[in-house]
Amino acid sequence: GGSLAHSARRLRFHVAPTMSERPPLSRLDDSGESRARANTADGVPEHLRDHLHVPDKEVFSLKAQLKALQTVLEGAEKQRDEALRVAASATARCDSFEERAAGRLEKARTRAETAERRADASERRADLGEKASAMLEKRAEEAEAKLDETRRVAEDLRRRLDEQVATNASLQEEVTVFRARVRDLERGVPTRESTTQTTAEDAAAAARAGGAREAEADGVCPLGTGLVTAVATICVVSFLYNAGQSTFDSFFPIYAAGELGMGPTKIGGTLTSLAAISFGVSAFFFSKVQEILGLTLTAAAGLVLVAVGLCGVGLAGSEFGAVAAAAVYVSGIPLFTPAVPILLMQCVPKNQRGAVMGLDSAVNSVARIATPIAFGKIYVHASGQLNAPFLAAGGVVLFAALVVVFRRWSVL
Image (cartoon, rainbow, N blue to C red; front, side):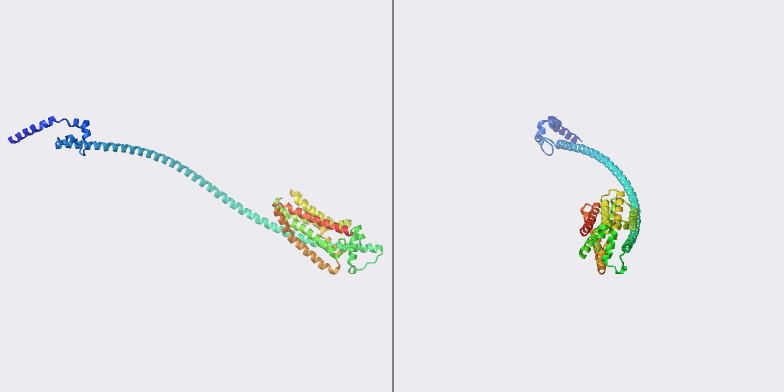
C-alpha cells in the first residue's frame, strides 16, 4: 500500500505541471492558429500533436467528428426542409390535380349522361322514323297500285276511244257517201253500188260534204296531185302529230306529280276526264266541224288545238291552267285522227291502201318510240324543266298544222 501511494504522488507531481502549464482545450481549439493548423484527419492541431496525450487527442478527434456530424446534420436538416417543401408542393399539386380530375370526371359523367339521354332520344326518333318510313312505303305501294289500276283503266278507255274513233270515221265515210248519192239523185245523176265506186268518186263526195273549195276540186286529193306526194305529206303530218301525242302521254303524269303536286288518284281522275272530253268531241262535234270547214281544214284545226294545248301545259303554272290546257289538247285529237284514214282513202287507190296504212302505222310507231327519248334529252339539257318537252312538242305539232294548210292551199 505504501508503494502505491508513493507512485500516485509521483504521478501527480509529474502530470500536474504539464496540465497546469497547458492552456484549455477550448481556447486552443477556438484560436485562429489552432483552426488554421487543424488540418489533419483526426482534428488535432499540428503544433500540439507532439504535446498532447492520447485522451486529449481523442477529445479533438471527437470534437472534429462532432462538427462533421453537425455539418451532416445541418445538411440533412436542409435536405429534410427541402424535401418537406417539395412534399408540400407535391401534395398541393396532387390536391389541385385531384380537384381538377374530380371536376373533369364530374364533367365527363355529366357529358356521358347527356350523351346517353341523347342516344336514347335518337333511338326513339329512329324507331319513330322507321315506323313512319314503313307507313310511307306502305302508302307508296298502295298509291302505286292505285296508279297502275288507273293506268289500266285509262288504257282501256283509250283503246275504246280509238275503236270508237275508227267506227265514227267509218260511219262518217258512209254518211258522206250516202249524202253524195242523195245529192246526185236530187240532181238526176244515176248512182252505182258502193262496191263499184272509184276512189276519185269517194274523194269527190267527201270533198263536196267538206266545203266549197274541196267540192270544186272533184276527184283531186287535197294534199297533193301525186300519190307519192300525198302519202309523204300524210306520213309526215302523222309522224309529227304522234310525236306530240307521245310527249303528252310520257311526260304529263310526271309533270302533274312533280310540278303540280297532284296525287295518283287525282292524276287518274284527270286522265279519265280528258278521255271523256275527247269522246264527246268525237261523237258530237266532228261531223259538224267537218261540214263547215271541210276534212282537211278540220284536221288542221285539230292539230292547232293539240299544239295550243301542249304549249299551254308547258306554260301553265297552276293545276287549273294545266288541266284546262290538257282539255284543249284532247279536244283537238278527235278532229285530226279520223281525218288520216279518210285522207288515205281519198288519195290512195284501193289496191294500195293496205300498204300505205301499214307504212303510216310504222311511221307512227317510230314517232312514239323515238320522240320520248329525244324530248327526254331536251328535258335533261333544260336543267330538269318539264315545260321544255311540252313547248317543243307544241311547236312540232303546230308545224304539222302549217304543212296541212300549205299543202291544201297549194293543191286547191
